[in-house]
Image 1 (cartoon, helix red, strand yellow):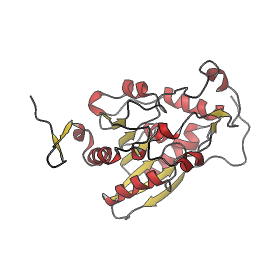
Image 2 (tube, helix red, strand yellow):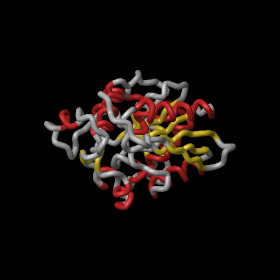
Image 3 (cartoon, helix red, strand yellow):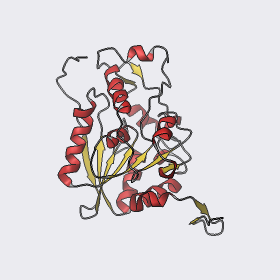
Image 4 (cartoon, helix red, strand yellow):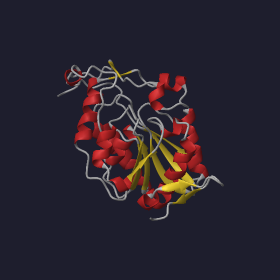
Length: 260
């Protein structure tokens, strides 16, 4: 299906944070997120404090060619800088899964399956076939879906609507996901109403899956400190750091559970 070319094609934007001598970490943000958003900035600050030089990728919100507008520019950026560790969230998790590079991924609530929350389920398949990049389909995302610490102004900062062309290219990318790598780890909330949790579960081995309490953005959820500690451990040590932990009531530290 041909779309009329636009004068300005969507492009990714990358900003760097932290000390360039630290370990490089690519952080592919979710749809509508910006490095300057309060909760995103909180996470980036914590990553840099932990010793990472963060390359934060801001994605277009209304692309229509997943490969050329999302995957290819991110892949080129990674290759040029020899980055081998990638953190990604939501739409960023879909992009990261398609990079096809020798990197280790930590996915946060990846958008690997489509939900029709806020949309008419019967009309949705018809709407996405329309050959237009005009955004008129409601995203259906609320502040409560994202996390209790999410600022209302930042929700408003993202577009209210998405285009049929955008949804179509995202759906095609979800249908063509490459095999899951055993070196990757996925964090997800079972109460996530933005992405399809079942699609995450169907794709991810239980040993590589870490559930957390909160909304779609763990970094905008009240329990984010606890989740962050596990994210940092997985970034450092990979799937080996996903073993269950228990909290010691006397000192508040987490310790490995002993085998029965």
